[in-house]
Amino acid sequence: MTQAATLTGGENGDGARRRLLTGIALLVIGQWILSLLDATGKTLTQQGLPVVAVAWVRYLGHVVAIFLLIGPTRWQRQSRPTAPRLQWLRGALMLASTLVFFSVLKLMPLATATALNFCAPLIVVALSPWLLGERPGLHARWTRWIGVGIGFAGMLVVVRPGGELDALGVGLGLLSALLFALLQMLTRRIAAHDAPMTTLIQSGVTGAALTTLLVPFFWFESVPTLAQAALLLSAGLTGSVGHYFVIRAFQYADASFLSPFLYLQIFSATVVGYFAFGHLPDWTTALGIAVICAGGLCVAGGEPLLRRVAARLRR
Image (cartoon, rainbow, N blue to C red; front, side, top):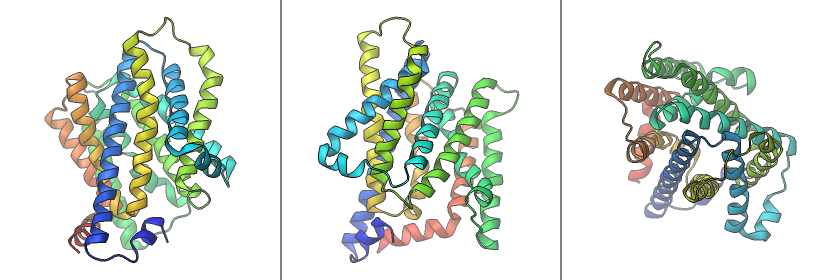
């Protein structure tokens, strides 16, 4: 039984509904904060700051912010992993995903890059029978693969081979989605061993350690300006706090309930991208993004899932 299920198991009516709405609110707030992190990464890399150096400050800030947020006692209790090798591998994958995604943001609009990253759930479905050993029933299998087909059709509409998007950016965007998919699958395995907070701490520690080894080879060419320094420091804060809110969301509501709301991050990325960079997807790109979301929702459970979500909110 999940922690969310345990917390809501004895509640009925208004209490259960309040917990579900709290979970949605925490998730949406976390997504907005993470979109601000992405906008910060895009701004700094477009201004010529090395991606590895930006990631180094982001992960160091992540570790410091989480330590201050939960305090030394909880840190000591929750920082020790049961599966350290899996945590280190996940941390390395998360760092690779961060480096690639920041590189993508340097080359394409925030909303488009975020939408491509949401191809990850589709890749998870394609790889999970071999990497996770998942064998869903025939109906679920057909539904998921239809969703995969729809999602990848949407991806082709977004990238429009031969269109205006930077070819390197598209390639890196698809690599970012693949890394994010592998990260999600590894997170599923780790969830059987360690609490989410332990994973959050270990991700920061591993990312900080690895970037500390790499950053001497990718150091700043000049001293960052005060504005750049402020943005660098904010990256660690927004990264840690954003992920903390997302983790808290799943303590109030289960993953199956929250999965449709994950796609609201594309909306937050669009709004932040517009106000920060003046970017809005054209109608064709917006259509492709909508198709990717439709495919992702189909993979997550389709119309029956949306009906269950609505029914639980009406109780």
